[in-house]
Image (tube, rainbow, N blue to C red; front, side, top):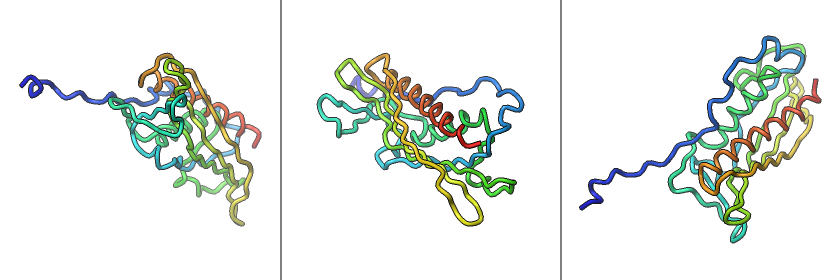
Length: 190
């Protein structure tokens, strides 16, 4: 009878936080070529709002969802937002719908495939947020696409606790590290 009166427990909903809290300095997007950022593609296992973890010390091949933790949107969408905000601090970043704008130089187009996005436990009390993505940069011109480069980015950050909140924080930090690594890689194309 008591269970009828108990309120159901709702899962905690997470995102990457508020992002930038101040506008970037004026003129900070000058000097680097325009970048068209495609939507982030993700493996089908990552196409949900579940916060996922792996127990590498027992079975690293099994992705498990936290029962009471969810992302506010699928990780690919969260990462896309973070990429657009992070890369947009130093350059103009457009969506694919905006990419047909005419300019003197054909735009660069960045495609991201999210391959791994999980809270990885190497031991019961030791874990990291693991983000692995493949970035492909092409230049789109009248003659089609020209491959400029491709890079595999693997970012890990230690989790402060062995639970969903710790994993979420570690995944957020690992995502930010991946964005920084991509920005450094992209800076070679001027």
